[in-house]
Image (cartoon, rainbow, N blue to C red; front, side, top):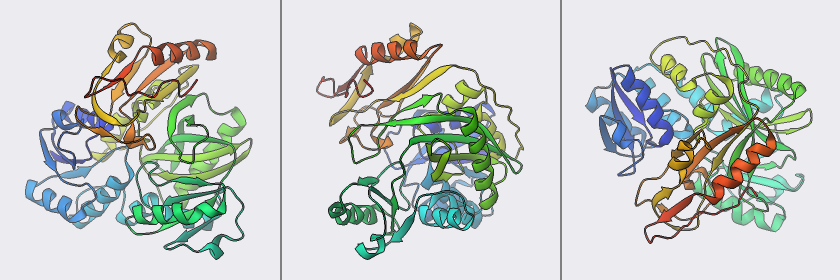
Length: 403
């Protein structure tokens, strides 16, 4: 089978490797000249995964049997759109793809189905009257951007014009959401919808940069919830799956939990990004990438999650501005058994201009331990023994972000 894979990040390496292990040919589409997944695919075509007509043209020209992606929102919408146009198999219809990748559609369906979510309004221009009854702080975000691009917290209403204009400009459809900020722990929850049942795989707390208006995720922290919250998450997962007509697919939901008050921020019918597929396997024993490939190849996979570790962190590195050259220390730490695994998200020569979104990370690593203290000791040790080296030979890594 000839398979078109959209997006060439580190997560897509695992996807491509699953296809290759089963004897399939892979053609990668990514707008970077040298994306991380390029060496793993049989062919790489430089093009934007968001350019629907170009992706359609490539699919026809290459005579592909399947179009797919993993762990990314907007490329998933392109997959659903082009697959429907070309009558190729896809686990999502284009309309469902819209509903689960466009935050405007998503929030309206959540509201219509009484699924707890923050008070919100959709805007295509600055309109202070539309938010006059909202309580500060607020959050503004584009309706259709990947990662946390354009997502800002507003503590003073005087800032809304600036951040709302930025969010609308970043949006492909020139719309943004303004919603009330919910207090509590942000948790990232992964499910697999088997038939119509959303099976909970794992939940982690998303730890972010302190005292920042952006929502930069520093790490996924486990454990995140108690037994009572776990039962609530199971209910919410099934509510979302039912409301959006999701069957036999991965489901990733971001929520704010404050005791038993749990609100949905957003979600998608995909695995979480940032090497989450590996984190899910470590925490639950479910090889979700393998199950996902079973699904897109026409199978009906089943999952039986367990709880396998006591404490775990998936830690993401961020840097001061510079041109990425290489990382030092991660392989040695893995060989020593201090870290369980690591993933590089940048290739040599890529520019790092800021530290705000998931696209700015050069790498991430996973650590586990039997106690919280032992995990913190590992974290401190790793942070002091790794470097992100620029083309000028300087360590540009931002250290001690989780201290």
